Image (cartoon, rainbow, N blue to C red; front, side):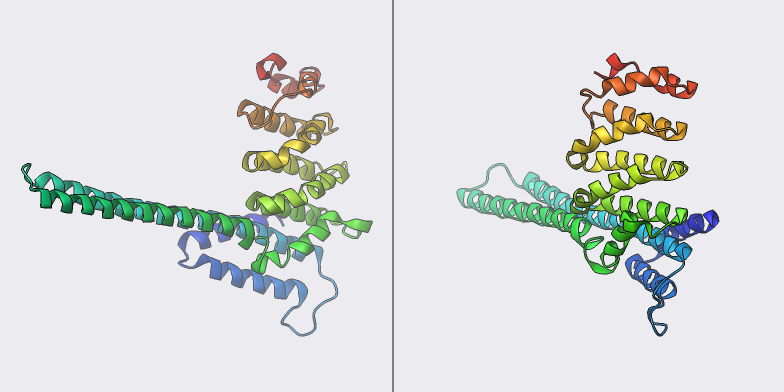
Length: 300
């Protein structure tokens, strides 16, 4: 099972690296997996599906969504660099033309030169407007198109329902881990989606079974990533992150301490009254956590 997830991740990475239209290939993958998971397009839709198939479906969607974000940002960067190179070449051409003109130019020639300068400045202004519009479009794609609308967004309500698990209908450990990880990936893409579902993610963290340390540790790491990408949205929930320093699992406490230390040292989280929580790590029963804990005064 673990080997399948690793192979799927590497396959998706390869598609986005070599395919000229990776978004089309990704859409085909999602549609095929939808058919095999829910029976859509194969006759009558199934009323239930195997938890492992649903886990694989969620995992695939989550990784594709992240790769689409990187793909969109790379395309935006390529357009920006091309426009900058074009503008620079034009400016250099004009400068060279000016340097070749004789110093004793007539008034008419000076007037023509002034008009030419105005035209160049206007063209440069249009180029800056186009660049701003391009950046706005990339932001719109990441904010709305990838996980809030479109093919992937159509399955977001199902993902939210599985993570919420009202009534305890979903008992598979691997399904819980895969769905929560996918939710974290969706939240890393869209600020709106993140802000809306942060309470759900923290509730899932609080309700995680005691024996499922992998789920809690991965969620803590994901919260650290979210704090870097959307610090204002995560900041009100930092006390819930500090609370994980008292988790019964050594692995979860160690992950939490690493995440918090990294966030604090990079000024992504302000140390307020919770500094005592980190100070308590100096007396943790696990020696590795004691060694990792920074002196409280160093964090102030």
